[in-house]
Length: 482
Ligand code: GLU
Image (cartoon, rainbow, N blue to C red; front, side):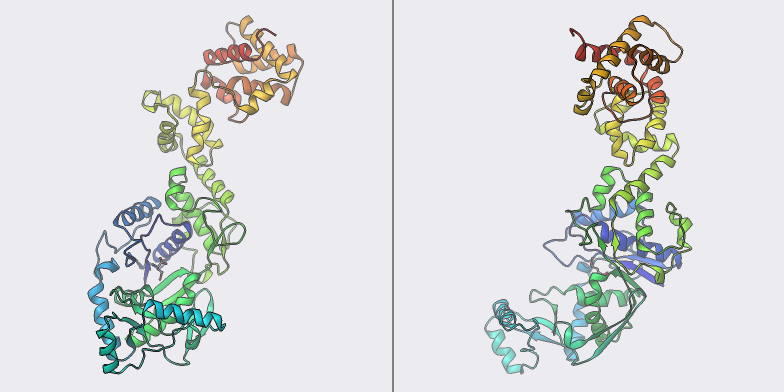
């Protein structure tokens, strides 16, 4: 078996497309098959070498590996469509020769006019077939007018096209309802996707095409081209599309969609892979966290979900958090380092063992690696400025008592066994407040915010000196002069 992923490098890769890539990769692994990576870059205006470079970089970051592709070569190359024009030309000549295709001289204006008319008459927009039977004389005349022809595929009349889709089951089309004779080579000589995908899949000996169901309507056209060229079509499997929580196509409106943004925010590749497999298959297990190696054996093409996958941002975050939590301090600290640097702290000046202890306390609070940026300040700043929410809390009457007694505690106590519990006990007794009204202001005084790690674990890492400074600072800010 041979699987393939064939993206167009026209932008950062969208997470819906990543799901297709992952599905093919995982299936190739499962069936011990080859995985081919092909670049579909015939859209010259939108495809760039830079996008291709980033696409490969992002997919490799995710952990995908291909056996054949533009960067690794292979027996069926070249693997970039822009380098295969000679091959396509050969097949176009065959189709023209066998009258499965013909030159069409209609200009854009004429086609627009036909389209307008069809809309006005409420007819489907289908090419009329005007140029299908032009005589050589007529062709010469049109060429003499300076018209450059495109090449159209001549669709068989009233043919039934049956797709035995591994996910969707049997899907039947009639050739009368697939949009009419379609262009396979544009007048500028550039061949189009629906045509060359067939040639590439056949010549690259692809046996299985797993892709989004938005391509299902292209499939009858591709099957007719395959038939005309005498190719055996691959086995198709069209997956449900990836939708946003409101069940419309997943887009930027719903949240971040490019793989690169997920990477930058600190999603881990193994968490993304895990999540994409989770929503791509109906898996007969309650287990939600698994590695590819663990799960691959249980996956089958037929068990891919045929219903659309609703992309649940919260769930993905949760999965990511599970991975962050599960890693040993040393490994996760390395992964956090770039984010701590980004937050403006010089990690090379920090004691590694101390940093790892902080991370051990904080990793459970992070769902994304970038979450560390907001959490680590409480350890690294001398005195963190309180945020708005904390300022409001520290202005309440109970907080005033807590701040005053915390200040008394540091004035009266030089050394103590356990700074945090001694502080809490002292303030509780002297200020006469308890529960939330005691613990939240203490958290606010020491960390400048109301959320964060467990204080009994955090305070020893912050250090007594810093804690004393912070209590003094908050006292001066909220209580001095009152
Ligand atoms: N280049 C096409 C895409 O990215 C490939 C579709 C296919 O898998 O046939 O949508």
